Amino acid sequence: MKKQIIILISCLAVVIISIGVYYFINKKQPQPGVVNNQATTPQVKTLNCFNITDANAKSACQSEADKILNSENSFACDALTGAADKENCRYTYVIKEAAQSGDLSKCEAMADKTLATNCLAQASFSLAIKKKEKKYCESIADKATKEDCLKVLVGMGIK
Image 1 (tube, rainbow, N blue to C red):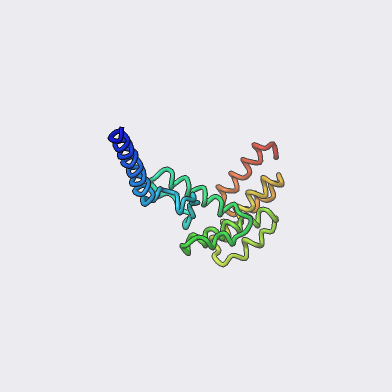
Image 2: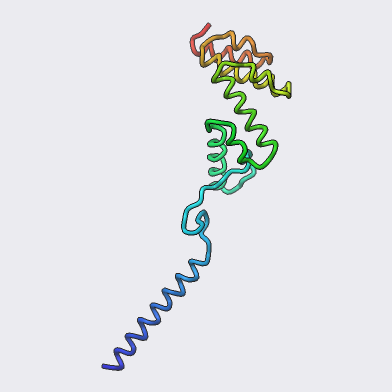
């Protein structure tokens, strides 16, 4: 009987030690997306997610970029690391603010005249759809964009 108890205790000790070793080994290996047993939120540092090949990482990048571009203020652009990304992000906010407020002078105030012209076209296009007025389409300098804007309004039943 003593021999059976000793064998049973030995088997239990081996099982307990094995579980401890397994736990110790797996705890030391970091799990993807987990830091200190807490899930991490990927932070986007760029608006360009095109070069990311991993589907999950690309999806997370696009989601975070959308959050930045759709947040309430342009301070979200400061989270980006590249100067070009920050500039593009702020440019997007100028267009959004001009279209929401109807104040196209926000676009005209841009230092880069090409960007200012593009901003005016995009904000005018948005305003034409929002206010259902073709005068905004007619103010667009680019002929193709102006025609597209007018086509959209015709599609909405506005002549």
